[in-house]
Image 1: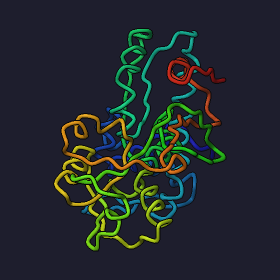
Image 2: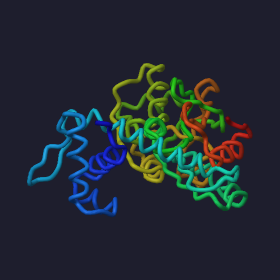
Image 3: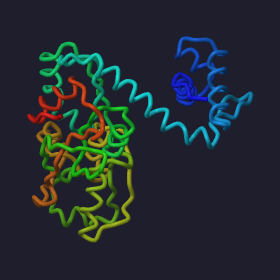
Image 4: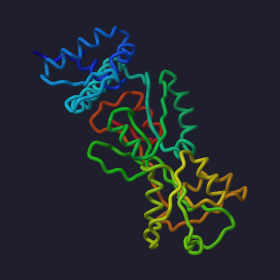
Length: 292
């Protein structure tokens, strides 16, 4: 028996939404239809995909192995629909990602001018760490994303977009860096794991023989700057991001050697997808380079 693509899409919905009932609502159908399609798929494959109990529906080992293929099929179908409707005019939804620092520093004027030039495109912007953005591009949840470079992955194409100068930040007063880094109770004020600036700060300190420091994790840039200004620790961020706090005397800015300070922000996209006209136009708008 040939696998029905609709059965596979229904399976993907049950896996994504965590149950037959929620999947039925999202698919605008009744639960019996969802159940029938899942059972037919299980029969076609000869495996059980879900463990059903009063507590709900959970994926079996076979179901977990099937999920990435079903997700890939969803993305391929969306790409096919987009390609069929592509008449050369940028339109539809464009989902992109960015580091929080890039969104704050660079994207507002670019997004505004892009939206003016291409009014038929609906932009969805998500922010996160470099690791999160790369994973979402690889999983086809985003068409592209701005991340900290370099990015070396066989499935991705990375195009240089912006250059930033990183600086070490601490609470006032200003002091020599060797004195700052020699404090016995020094702590790092950082974003969650996967943040490229966090990794780079730890590398900079390790080159100076400083390892194993206590970490304070915060969820936003505003919280990090506030914690640093309050003397809770040091951090590493693009220098241009902290202009107001620096000028107001709330933050002390320590310049780094050029080899440690310079960082390239790149725009990454999957190598194997057909780019939508919206993405082509956005890529050229931001990087001044066309993509195929």
